[in-house]
Structure formats: C-alpha cells, structure tokens
Length: 119
Image (tube, rainbow, N blue to C red; front, side, top):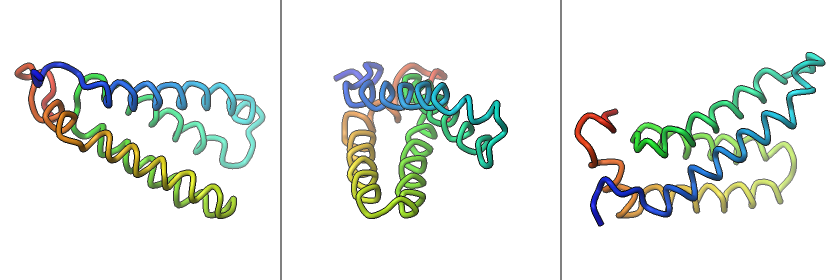
C-alpha cells in the first residue's frame, strides 16, 4: 500500500468521529440555547470530535492521539452513568486505538505527500 493512500481503518474512524460530532452537536444544541449547566462543555467535546474526524482524513498524526484521548475521556465520564457505559466506551476506545495505530494506519500518519501531513 502506498503511504499516501488512506487506509479503510482511518476512513471508518474519521467517519465515526464526524458523525458522532455532528449528531451530538445538533442533539445538544437546544441545551446550549437554553444555557443549561455544562452545555458549553458538551458542545466543545462534540466540536473536538468533528476536528478529529476532519484531520484524521487529512492524515495529521496529532489527530489520532486526540481521537484516542477523546475516547478515553468518555470512558472516564461514563463512570457517572454506570458500569455498562464504562464497558461500552472501553470497547470503543480499544477498537479506535487498534484501528488508528495498526501498521497501515501508522504508515499513513507517518508518510504521504511531503508537507501535506506534517504535525
């Protein structure tokens, strides 16, 4: 595989992040308008998901680290909602990390067009 070719694993994770971010942003927007407690922080996490998705597509190495940190953050905050949420988010964290750090993905984030994926 040429390093400039985006692996399917990266496509999948980037699409998931974009979808979760956009849907979450829309779902929680009414809470933001109503100025509910912590709504700004909820919307900020959705924006982080969107940014991760966009920059995963662009092959930015930092985006895969932020994507894994975002998933790990959700494992931590899911403790507030019970063990089922912790298990589900933990499985998602492991899957995301595996997809983004497996060989083809690692090569994609390390290589590619000169100057296109620095950082």
